[in-house]
Image (tube, rainbow, N blue to C red; front, side, top):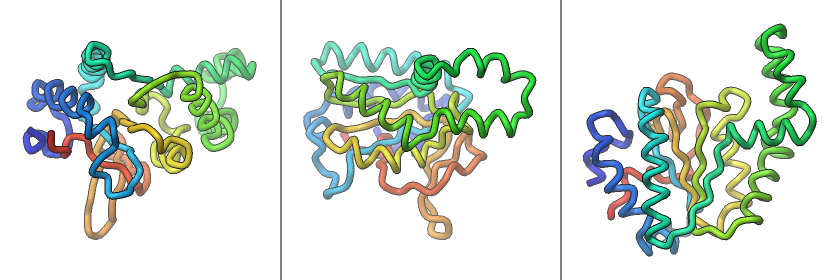
Length: 207
């Protein structure tokens, strides 16, 4: 099944994604983190950004399947989490007031300061993990938080905190491997997010 995907979900392979992902994610070897050769249990599901609405539906369908299969899922939508943090810190109204009037670069810097990945976002994710009983962590909302949250930076910092359960990030872009550039995340298929090599492409995983 994995060979059908070409390492990224496209319109033509979307119909096979549900069967592949549910089979893999509900399997004992995946939940028990077998076959990782000692590496961290991080996985990426790259998809064509044009399919975002389809992917949102797919994620809901997968979660429903996993609930029926007795697999406990914790989904952390980064966009929702960023809003939650901003409201808790009292910054939400300020952000809404200044988003239109402030220069984009300045606003981005301010937002990055409020939602700094290592001291702010990672502890918030860790708190969510501590509050929930789960077998699988899903990370969604990646495209919505770019550029003030970089996926590579998030994964780099999260890998210290999230080693006990498998993690799957739905990524609107490509997870590329090349001899010249190594392994990197390419957001929206055009923006090289950064080099990150410790995750597995879930579409390449055999069932």
